[in-house]
Length: 429
Image 1 (cartoon, one colour):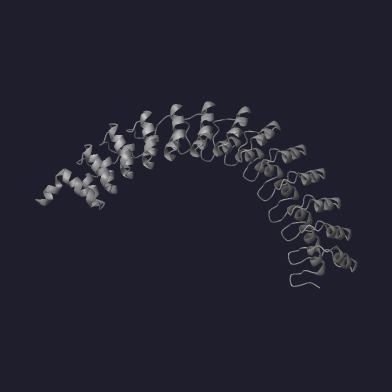
Image 2 (cartoon, helix red, strand yellow; image 1 turned 90 degrees about the vertical axis):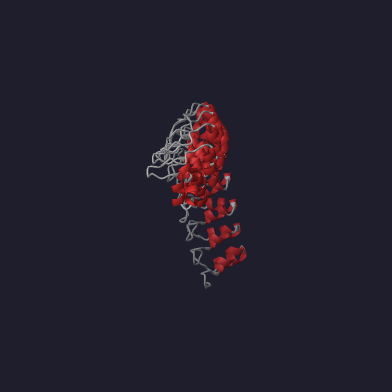
């Protein structure tokens, strides 16, 4: 007889761990392989709950040691998952399959043992020739798992068992990629000493070098450098080098190391951004100073800093000789235009105090004053006028700044500009 969930008396005795009742049921010819609703057998329950004597009785009664539940878990998998090494040993002695994988995630018993750092279980499984290269549903082998965790002892056991050192996951990552990304320098050295290919790229072009630089793992980078990696190798999807990645993620020590080993500080990404552009855009000041000291080209960097309102970065760039009048943008905008449009008053004042041309026009004829008037930045309009900006200059559409302010509904800006142009007096008359 079974309850509504398919549990018979043998299931119950196995779950609670009662050898005497289990033996009576077995002597009464209870079905050792009867499945509950999720295909759970008495052996699964005994193994999961750590009942060694019950497990032994069931195995002696010829219970199917390799039968799996609906999720693909075998008794051996459950014993290992719940930390019952004596039951694991017993199941192995009875010849349980070491390579059966769960159907929901594809992980084998060896995956689980490695992830839980059960070195004794790993050793037993390897002695029984467990497959070291089976991958789970994510494409991870046991060596990949060890690389993520940095487990040196387990990894050495796997390599001694001839695990594929360069096997890739679904996205092309090897153990070296994963160890580098997770910051395990000793593991990286072990892989490199073992002949791992250092320049393998993932499907998006990312190498171990990129991952270490992006995450700021400087010790990993040191080991990779000793094995002569390509320091300027680019990622295929975005054209980033290790220097771009270290800059983006604000790792000044990594940037210093890369520059010392001759990384190209002026190489651009596929979007045309240099490392200095990225540092300026993100206000990473220590990295910015390192790049400036290394003589990085300042082209467009002032635009990035001015647009984001990074006053100190603008100061550093100007001190380094950045040209605020450069018009590298497609529309012909200078840093002055960008600061005026965004309403960054302090940056605009700094640029004006450095003697930058206040009336320079973009390709459409708009000056900084037109842009400030359009956006309604009253203080910016006032500052530009105080520095002598020409309120009468017209755009390609023959509009003055006051007309732009009026068309944009920025009446306070219009009144100031109209007064400066004499229009206010005309209106009163």
